[in-house]
Length: 115
Image 1 (cartoon, rainbow, N blue to C red):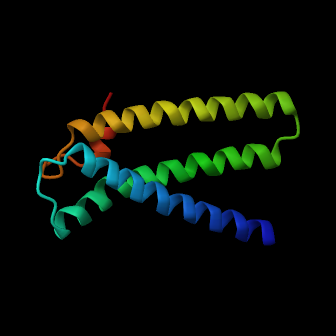
Image 2: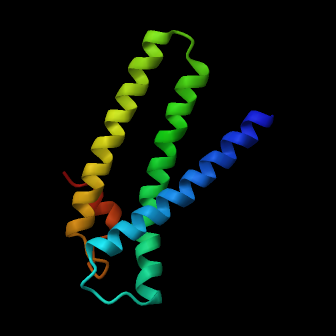
Image 3: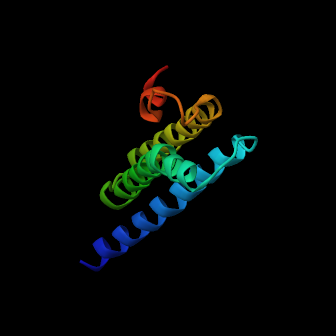
């Protein structure tokens, strides 16, 4: 029970940090636009929460692989695959953040899912 609470706390902390980092990264990429409170809340809900949720999910999968899989070779392989997936996700996320504008009729999730 203690490990589940610890995992939930770490996941929540990672979610908050990654949401704030993604939102701040989007604001830095679009520094030429005026950012008022309404625009910042839109950035957090459209960009930050999506990035935070996916980052937290990848962290949870890595943690699950480390805790549950006993075979060291398989565990190492799966963790490496998840880390590579995370790097590709961050690259894809950054590209979408560069070209996405919050006043666009298309949501950030829709633009993120396009290839």
